[in-house]
Amino acid sequence: MINRFKIRRGFSISKQIEFVILLNHIRQENPEDSPMILLDKIEGESPFITKVVKKRLQDGDTFADALSETLEDSLYPYALGETHNVGIYNDFCKILLAHNDLFVRRIVVSIVLVTLCLLGLYFDQYQLLLFASLSLLMLAFVYKPILRLHSLRKLL
Image (cartoon, rainbow, N blue to C red; front, side, top):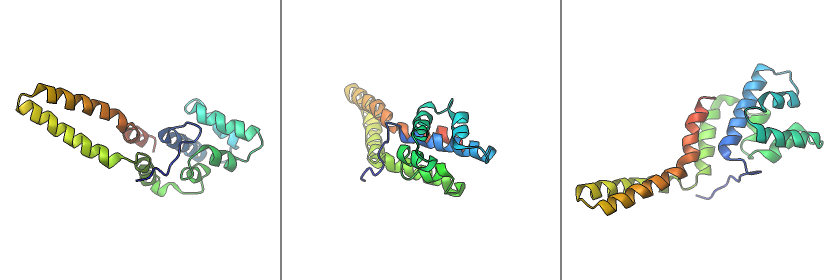
């Protein structure tokens, strides 16, 4: 699968999703507030993306332009409130899965490594057990974008 989602300004996709969710929550509570006031309210929880959007607003960009230049193409309609949050959870799941383009391969590799661990344990091949378990631990660091979804679920 080709990775269609690029990281803008060095922000991870999960941080961008968290920013959009926070912005939508604040907008629902205070629908009359201006964009700068909304950004001030979430600056403590998402400081870096907020600073970039504020800088673009101060440079004369509109709120829509500032968000479109900062966030992923598939996320900024949610941040603008153009797309209703009916299927927001499913869409964010799809974005995270597409962002992690080798997800299926990593699942297959982890199943193979667990099998090697069990075979090494069964046949008393501790070198195989050690190799497979260390490889499995290193592979766990790759799953962070997907595991981050569970913490984002609390915000939805």
